[in-house]
Length: 147
Image 1 (spheres, rainbow, N blue to C red):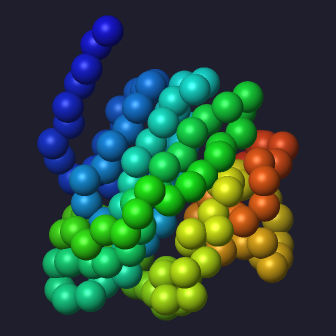
Image 2 (image 1 turned 90 degrees about the vertical axis):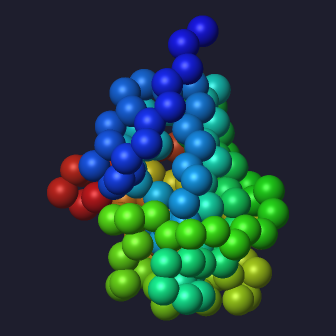
Image 3 (image 1 turned 135 degrees about the horizontal axis):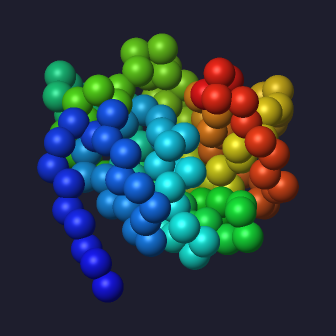
């Protein structure tokens, strides 16, 4: 077993194929590349947060697991953490704040990668990755330009 620990601005970092990804800084959205890099059975822990003060945020720790090309998702609890450099998008702040305040993120069951219009099951619908309250759905190829 090989373990690699990366310390850098995670936004441009490509970890290659991984069995596990642990992100230790808050962000407004998932990076589609990280989902692409999870191997079958791979797990990711990522803090999805809204800004509270400059440099810090509050939200939930999301656990994402790849299974048969699909992504199940759940929350493991609340989190208060410093913000990730380069992984906060001001245009998503209002959406993530609303999802946290309404506690809808606790209903998260999947990450959809297929191109679709937002529906009532979309909790956070951004950049080619939709956090959804729906059970896992079939993954279709997502055009890189749509990400």
